[in-house]
View 1 (cartoon, rainbow, N blue to C red):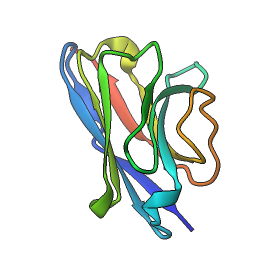
View 2 (view 1 turned 120 degrees about the vertical axis):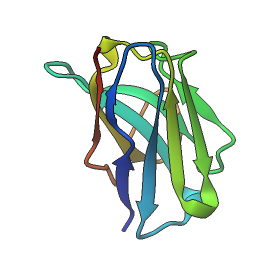
View 3 (view 1 turned 180 degrees about the horizontal axis):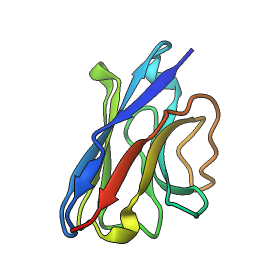
View 4 (view 1 turned 30 degrees about the horizontal axis):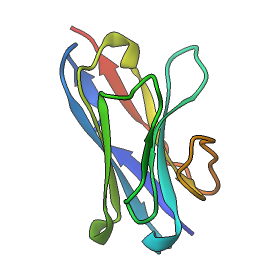
Length: 123
């Protein structure tokens, strides 16, 4: 069974950048699952950020994050990265990675979720 674990969160100043990592273990047939990044800010619903296909050849970005985030996949290490630039306080949230059947704008998840990593943007 696939297990996911996020890392890389922390306290960042406004305008800064951060790279989050999502490591996969267990069933790591990377050819068969997409990975999505989601976030949930205090008092708000969880929202999609980005996803990447099983091959890494297709990526999607939520409109709210487009232009500031880059998702990538390092298959040999079973790691998916999310780089976020120009961070602002509204980006403060818990960031999660999740297994998806396909990377699409439906943002459908199926299977494993990580426990999340906290990102706090503050001066």
